[in-house]
Image (cartoon, rainbow, N blue to C red):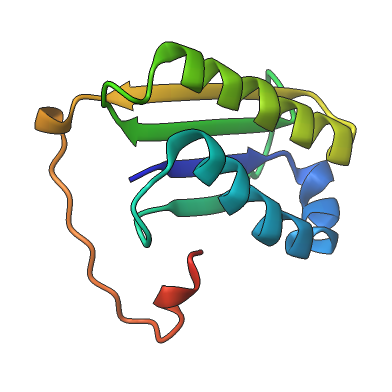
Length: 121
């Protein structure tokens, strides 16, 4: 269930477009290596901000289903690795938040309409 939102400041949007192949290849691997999600349960979205009024130029949030295997150490390792990945590839400030959610606090549903839904992104 990992849901990753990457919100980018306007001045980075062109750079993100140019590096879209890198992101598409690297991010699922980075998430898999830390959270081991079931196939097809990842959601990764890059969201352009209209303005970045305060804070870092890249804001990354990951929400995942809590389990005994996804410890605080695992989350921190992911935060460290993804922060390093984005700061090195985009030479920009990065803020990362990894948030664990109790499964009983989640209601969810997926309905795929696109023919490309099986590509993992």
